[in-house]
Length: 361
Image 1 (tube, rainbow, N blue to C red):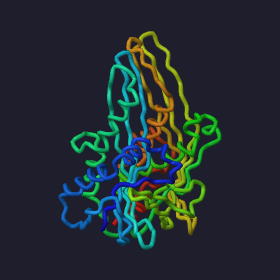
Image 2 (cartoon, rainbow, N blue to C red):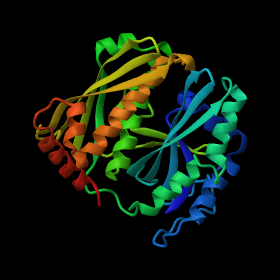
Image 3 (cartoon, helix red, strand yellow):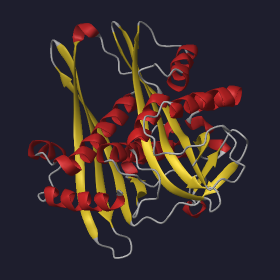
Image 4 (cartoon, helix red, strand yellow):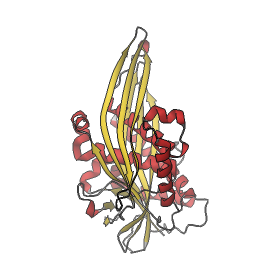
């Protein structure tokens, strides 16, 4: 298997999704890829034959290519009287594809999250410094290289999965569309990022590969996914047809403020409807509404300022996705009552779990 270095999901007009990684890549693609090569050299497992001596050059036509595909970056902030909390996120995936057939064989989403605290709002240079540590510093707690190696240690990457599952549709209720700020509407940013977060959490919490939702040419799934590499090669990769579909409807986000003499309180709510089905037969294995309420209590003395409520909405939605994907197998009665009113949700989750088992090796 050939190591193609890191790549970027999407056409060049989607570089706004990963501005820091793209800037580092343009400045020093060889140096950045070298860090991931060092990661491969640190692998403990001996059953993988990964050829990495020709970093970033996949034009030689080797049959299988392993790449770390960067999908998006994000920064969220919360301020209190003591300073500012900044949360840095990178969404990526370990992708294996066939160069000859231009087809994705496997996709394992991963997510990196790192928190920083400072006395003031970080500058652009401060943010760049943190992302540089994420991509270059192998000893950094939030290192993407470390996360990629940890995943490679445990994943079965030799062959494609027998059956495939994919987020087939992620739609927004009309009320959500009206709520979204312009920065999240542009280029379907909110829709794509939401799908990627769910993919990452499902893959991580259920140890299952999942076909990527993100597509190179937005709005035309037949073109599949575009991956771009350091040597200038851009591949339009075919995504195999999914055997099972996940359909997610994002419903209206809600916010309420709690009033008290000694504290400020907020409740942020995330609401979705999710369906899991087999497209050929039309059989539905799971159909349920889910919700999660994120209650935040702050002392008035702390003077908390929520700089962008959409940071909290997105975090609440991520927490909902994390809870759902864990409960597919955990099925804790108390937790399930907190996120859904569906009476037979345990039975539905058991069916979903059987599907995921068929998509593993």
